[in-house]
Every structure is written in C-alpha cells, then in structure tokens.
Image 1 (cartoon, rainbow, N blue to C red):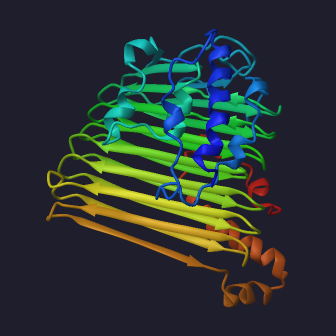
Image 2 (image 1 turned 120 degrees about the vertical axis):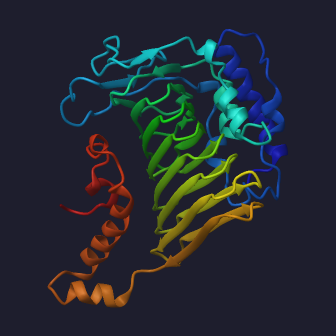
Length: 414
C-alpha cells in the first residue's frame, strides 16, 4: 500500500495537470488530497495503488484507439458509440450519433452530476475513483430513456498509447417502464488509467441490463464506480467480466429507494500474472419486499490477487427482503491469492438473506475424468477453467457475447 504521505506529491501533480488541461490556472477542488486511503483502511487494506501512481501527471493525454467492433450493426433500436481522442462519443466511423427512438441526449447539467451518487452512498462521500473522475472535464454523456420498446446501447473505449487518462461520465434517466440494454467495453493495451463513472435513475417498472467488459494489461489501471437508484418494480441486471489489469477495482453501489425492486449482480474476475482485481459492491434496501441475487466468481493464477467484498444493508424498514450472495473462487497457483468477504448487515427481522463463499482448486478426479478420455492434463485444466468462467458469461446479453473472445480471455483453443 502506498502511504498517504508518499502519494500527496503525486496527487498534487495530478490536480495541477488536470486543472491545466481544463484551462484553469490552479485546481479548484483540493478534497482528493484528503481522500487517499489511510493505512489500515478496511476497504483498501489489500489494494496497492502503486500501479496508478506510476503514471506521470505531466504527460497525461486523452488519446484513444478505434475499437474492433464485432459483427455488423444490429439495426433499429441499437446504437454504437466510441470515445474519440477529443473526448466525444461518436459512431464507429466518427460520425455523429443517430439516436434511436426512445433514447435521446439531455443536458448533463440539468441532471446534476453526482446527485445520484451522493443519494445512493449512505454517507454521501464519494469513493476515490468517483472523486478522480470528477476532477476531469468530461467526457460526459447524459441520456434519457423512455417508452416500452427496448433500446440497445454499446459504448467502447480503446487505449493503445501510454500515459492516457480517460474519465468518462455516463448519466442515465430511465423513465417509468423504459428498457435499456447497455454494454460498456474497455480495452487498454498500455500503461494508462481509465476511471469511468456511471449514474442511473430507474423509474417505476424500468429495466436496465448492463454488461461491463474490461480488459487491460500490466501497468494499466481501471477504477470503475457505478451508482444505481432503483424505484419500486424496477429491475437492474449487471454482469461484469474483468481481466488483465495491473490494478482493476470496481465499486458498484445500488439503492432500492422504495423497496419491491429486483437486483441481479453477476461478476467474473480472471487474474493472471501479477494482476490485482478488486470488487467492492454495496446494495442498500430502503423499503420492503426487495430482492437481490448476487454471484461473484474469481480465478487467480500465477502471482495474481483477487479481492471481493460484497455488503448488503437491510435496515428495519426493509422487511420481507429476499437476498442471496455467493462468492465462488478458483485458486490455480500456490503463489496466487484470493480474499473474499460476503457481508450482510441486517436489522429487519422478517427477511430471507443468505450468503456464502468458497475457495477451491481444480479437483484431481475432474482432471482424471477428462484425461481418461484422451485429453491432455494441460488442456483438461483449461477446459475446466473455461467451464468455471462460462457460469458467469452465460448471463451476458446476446449482443455483448461478440466482444470478449473467449479464446483470448482463457487462452483456450476453440
């Protein structure tokens, strides 16, 4: 862990650099100087931020690379956008977006960026990633979704040049009964940092299906924060797949503001080499009859480290809550490490809440079964790893399946 006294000079340089990029003579917000994790912080005690502080603030830029879109566009109700080097969301060929029926951009100032985040987090204090995102001027994308027809939105971010710093901010307002499928694909192939932030308000009966696909490399940092405020009868489904990052940390916050909503969280972290993949989720029930189904799976190999902390908060007002939380982990190396902590904070007395965690290795009898059928031990191991990962991959929406080539993620020949 980088000590705060060691990080303060780097933070000061970062603030100065970001202020200069936005045309300011000096930074206006100095609060991030005090938000760096303290030694012994429970939420950060396993997370080393050295990968982030290796960036040179004086060399930061926002250059992006064109993503490799899978397949052809999918017609009406489906929109693809990519982040360009000027901080704008454009079409696959650099064209201006052609907004489908039911999806339209709105003024992000009118949506009060950060309001959802402060509402969802009980203390109102934003985590480090969200603070760093707020320091950057754009790129912000605010969208309103309305009408009963499903809308599909794919967003892509690619980075191939070192010292890139990207902090996209996405605000979504789903009107009552609206349906949105969102895929956010991030691929970084250089020493760089991507710090996205998503805020979403789901009206009564609205559905949001989110697929987060993020792949990085050693030296790349990914700090992702999402804040979801659910109204009654709304449904939120999130499937996250992450691999390859030097430092990857995801912090989804979900609040069922009136109860009687459904939340489904599925996560997969594949950590190899010296990767550190960290997930901290929080789900708060602020009304009765809410439902949660959460499953997080991690695979750690070589000298990698996977961390999971899932907090479920059920106050007295949230009677008849039905919540389940499961953490399943596969340890592939004696030098790899997995830390997992599913956590329930329950005050209500009429609830049905369960949680569990397992850490295991590949079983010899499973390997022997495949070897007895002519499959080599190494390939048998990879096939079992693939099966472990597909338990989460199958929850991805159909139009997202073309993004993460499974043979690249798992290094398994088809």
